[in-house]
Image (cartoon, rainbow, N blue to C red; front, side, top):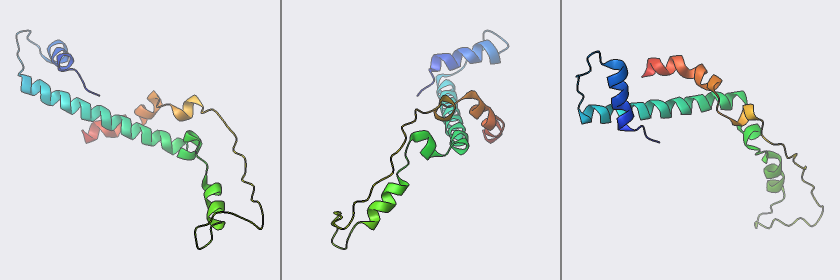
Amino acid sequence: MSVPPELVARVFHDVAFQKPDTRITASTVALSTEYMRLFIKEAIVRANDVRLEEEPPTAIDGIDNVVQATQSLQNVDQFGDTSVEEEDVELPEQEEQPPTSSASTLDTRHLRAVAGVLVLDF
């Protein structure tokens, strides 16, 4: 992900500068571009943390193998043989549920939740 330097220079000229003949150096544009890239990346990371707090990762990603892992560890003998001769263990069937859009999509409400603190930190 990168912010085009031309876009940053254009924003400076159209929004920030009061005089049309104001100039900006390439190094300033490059530094501002990197600053914006870091800001956007941090906003995405923080908003994703908010999304994950709303729905635990197991529900979002469809990973629910805690029961299976526990059962498979009980069936391993000291030599690492995983075969079970005495009884057959049935694993619970997992329901295939398509992820809901609210749980699997980073939304503007997630960004809105972190916007104030994010601006203060930057």
